[in-house]
Image (tube, rainbow, N blue to C red; front, side, top):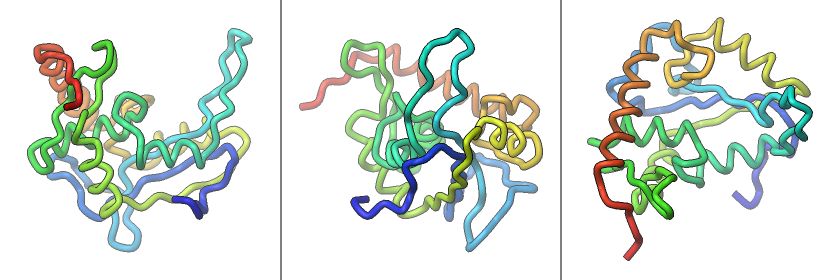
Length: 177
């Protein structure tokens, strides 16, 4: 991603997928170039109302993290890994001190799956939280949980993620070999 075209700006990004995990209902979802829109996100997040300094994260940093980071820092990766567990072998585990959850040594497998199947588009904007809210309320986005309780997949996805965390808590903390 050295020649990354994603700008170092604030904005909204949208994730399309060529292969859609089988549990996800795609009725009404937007499609383009053989891929289905399943998730939108923003960078940075809305500035805090308590006077704390706002995030300085950019679209480029956030998109890169979704592609190459881990489930502890990417709700999209957490969701995909839980949905793809039986397909690509991702199992949520506690790592480090035991407080963080990732797919441990299977994060690379998830990254490879995303590289083959994910397409991302973005729109720079100064107040991305406003556009995100508009999109979530007007476009079916089955992988968005925040602000999306009305989507029919919300409770199923929420429970799937909770179950993965419960199971991870029942396992020892994962340490790389």
